[in-house]
Amino acid sequence: MKLEINIDKKTAVVSNSKELYVKKFFFNNNKFKNEIEGYLWYFKKKINVTKKKNVTCLNLPYLSGYQIKFWRSITKNKKEILQVLKHYKKFWPINKKKKVPFHGDLTFSNIIFNDQQKLRFIDWEDFKKKEVWGLDICYFLLSVLILPALSRKKKNIFNEEYIVFKDFWDFFFLKNNFKFLKDPINYLKTKKLNRNFFLKKINKKILSEINSILKKK
Image 1 (cartoon, rainbow, N blue to C red):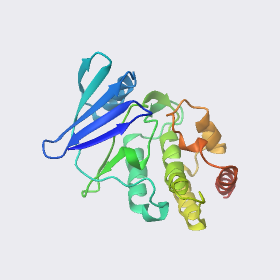
Image 2: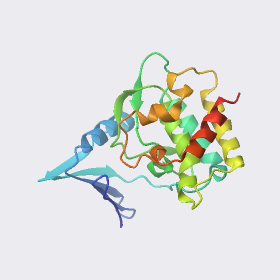
Image 3: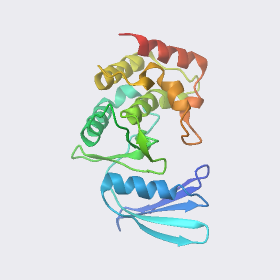
Image 4: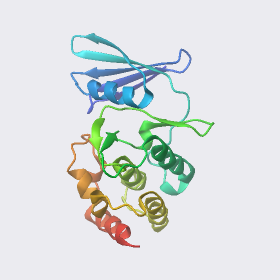
C-alpha cells in the first residue's frame, strides 16, 4: 500500500497494487467536484463517492504502469513526451473555433504510462470544461523544461534542453496561431491554476531565455 499526502492541496491518495484500488481523499476541499467531472469526461466512467463530515473520498480503479519523475531532464524523456503529444491530438481533435476540456495540471506527475505504450491522464482536480485547444500541451511542455531546472541548485536550463523543447513545441504547434502562443507563460499566469504553479517560480533569466527561444523560427 502507498500513501501520498499533499498538504497544500488538502488531498491524500491511498493506492494498493495488489488489491487494485485507489482512494483519493479531499479534506475541506471542493475540488473533488472537478475530479469527478473530469474523470467522467475522460474515462467515460462514474466515480464511486463516499462522504463523511468534511472529508470526501473518491474510489478510483487502479491503473498499472509507471510515472516519469518530474525532475528528469527533457533530453531523457523524448519517447514519453512524444507519446503525450500524440495522445492529446488523438483524444482532443484540433478545434480552433470551440473551446475544449482542460486538465489544468498536465505534468509527468499526473500521467501513467505502461509497457504497451499506452498512457492515461490522472488527477483531474483542476479540470475546466472550456479552454483553448492545446493549452494543456503548452503547460506540459513548459513543465518538462522548467521543473527539472527548478529542482537544481542553480536553477539553470541547458542549451540541449532548449533545443529539444523547441523541437517538440514546433512539432505540436506549427501552423497554429492561437493567442496564447504569442506569450504562453504570461497567458498561463492569468489562469487560476494550482497554488504551487511552477511558472511563478522561474527567474527573469529563464523567462527571457524561453521567450527568446519561442520567437525563433
